[in-house]
Amino acid sequence: MTALQLKSQLIEMIQKEGNTKLLELVRSLLDQGSETSAYRSMLLEGAIKSEQDIAAGSVNTPEEAIAKAKAAIRRNKA
Image 1 (cartoon, rainbow, N blue to C red):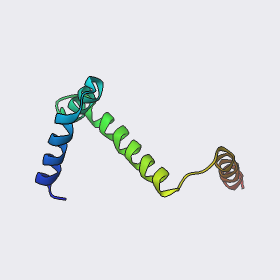
Image 2: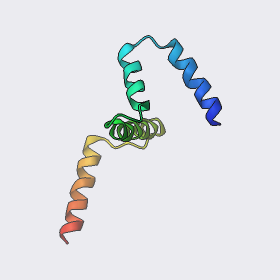
Image 3: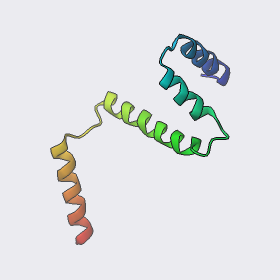
């Protein structure tokens, strides 16, 4: 997707959006002068990656996550 296509798609989505909080968040993410924009961008990228992982089924149950963490701790102690 080109930048122009992406911009057009975003404009269309923004025009349809009625959630003021979401629109304010988008504005702050796009505000390059904001000192928090880089941090927010990082959080957004993480959220997008998480959603992609969930959609792809690349997630662990809490029990699996605990087992993996314990195994990593054991490896690091050895």
